[in-house]
Image (cartoon, rainbow, N blue to C red; front, top):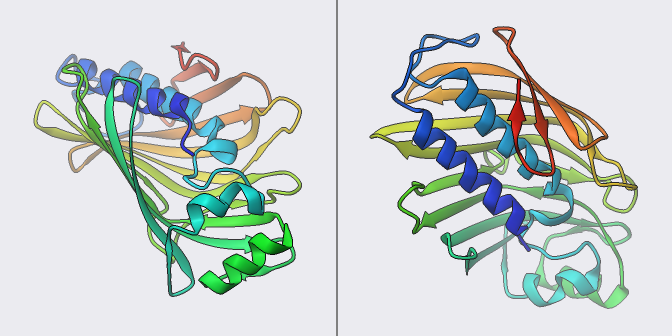
Length: 255
């Protein structure tokens, strides 16, 4: 199921955007924007923090074994070999979310699980999931007045999904993910591209890099890279040269 810490990180990113937009003009490797680079860094930092739990808990499917997915996956339907399902839930007083999932599942022994019959075969065999391709849209309806509602998209399409692979060995994440919300009538978005981000099995901190862009409306504002080094901190480097450190436990960013 979805990790609540991930929810909080996305919600905190929305707070940062709401408080930062419309203030002093600044530039960090993109065009001049009313979104300060410090606010953009904080938003990217919270999203980076949320990504730490992606490999283990950000998918709607709970667990990687046949037992873990049996009660949820059997409620879905298969369309063109993709498991399709929707889910609604609440978020610890923040509001609620709707998760529209499209996932392509692969068992270690079973191979591509492309039908209900193949899913039942996978469950009965006790096989483990080896990889998951996902294109999903998560809509957050926030009740707090300080935070606007927003949308998170994992993957761009079925042809360009986010990929979680190596589940039985070393999980790695590759592909696109994005955040989009509205602040002061302007759409703010963050896009990240995971490049083989791997999770250290001993402490669950990732190693690898994520490229990101931040846009205000249709205007690209910032771009850069988040570098993970297997510890509880990561480095955010903007193309304009600004460097920030994010604590992956708290999501706090410092220059």
